[in-house]
Length: 148
Image (cartoon, rainbow, N blue to C red; front, side, top):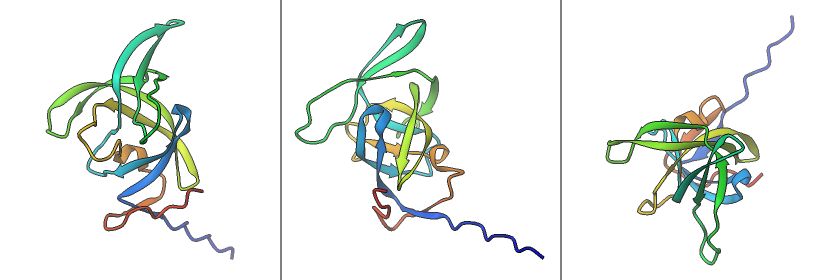
């Protein structure tokens, strides 16, 4: 009788990890893993909507590291959603879709654009971004993943 292969063990991640959003030109970006948040949020300032070839687009200034020049990023608008901010107040946000790379694995996620300047982490990864990817959060540890 053939044996069933044991299910792969989940990858353990910390409550903070470095991730890449290479399609946006953002690598080694500090992310807070927040299973209490449904939607992920990326710090963005100077958000400007425009149309290009009949498609709604957004241009924004992403987070930057010390010494890095300010630049803009352009992406197609995937959606607009009412999302509760940290104070629990709903606000309509622009949502983009991009590729996340974490621990050598990569998949598509939705990111809302928000002013997170007063927050300590420029990126929040909510539960919809990490579910179904066999991840287990160790909320007492940080930076458990290899850069892969």
